[in-house]
Length: 88
Image (cartoon, rainbow, N blue to C red):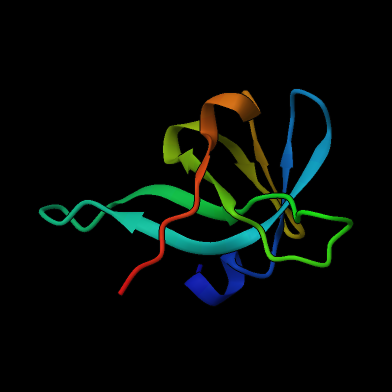
């Protein structure tokens, strides 16, 4: 599977059936090249008018299943929702 295919799938939390969004980035281990986590933009602020200031960092081990349309994860949102980092 290609990264562009992964980025097109909706990510759904199996714990509460909530749609989190789509993958916006990936975190890699520099030495092995393995994917460590999937990054998903957090919820929009102010009724969706302002861009999110948080993002979900979902560890790869929390992915339960990758299907044809969705990626099922099992996370506790408060543990994976972090302040958004601006990369330069």
